[in-house]
Image (cartoon, rainbow, N blue to C red; front, side, top):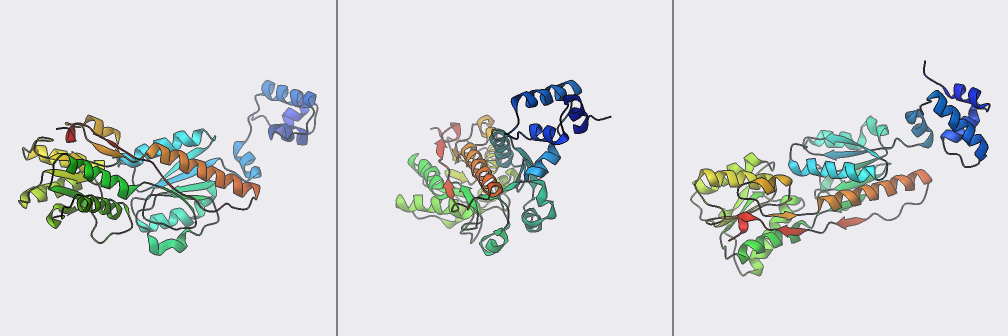
Length: 339
């Protein structure tokens, strides 16, 4: 039979309340009494019921990370970084995959399972600016990504436009003048695609170049297959290009594959750069130049902000104003843009 708190109290010669005070680190317990109780716990092998303890404290010790899909390397690596960051605060991470589905994203925000975790890190893809009211929740929330700005929550994001500007400027600095963009979303202004396309266009304007709209290629979900398909269409349409900026590394890997199939040399004929700096890019042939948008920094800051909000709520402190933080980025040059 499982050892109970009553068993510990009996062996230590104290009340059950005293055992509870020791287990829950109540400060006003005599040291001699605390020692007797801890000795009894060791002898009996008593295990603290962590779930009950957390309920009494109003805390589960769990935080939730909700992302569109873990099969994309960026989100898998982000989840890994969030788990590592949360461990520093003695927190465990639950992962929720929304599959880029609006109803699932809404359930993450409002589902009755909310009681399972203390706070939520949320990267929505289908919810947008028109859904601001959905983010008025009564628990700690930190937003990730670029679909929603100005929500009643802390927000940690990337310097999408500035980083895309630098990626495009890097290609133009190599003497490339026909830079294709893979992954556009027509009409998007708020969102990773729209913000990165804006940086692409700004770089051309700064260089005194007019973008040939035939070079701007759409892709739905940013997967390897969509990058390959957009590149295949670009080639079959007969549009001349000497560089490709893929809006994420997954598509860039698809781009490299399709260029190889078509017998187009990288970087001799076409320079290629991606965005996200996922580990796979180091092992493509040639290795992939990319933008490192700071996912480790994003994970650390997002977890720190969330834990701060959790502790603020549990202590009943007045909330501080919402924060919007932008991660530092850097360009990583590898073989795909080395001339």
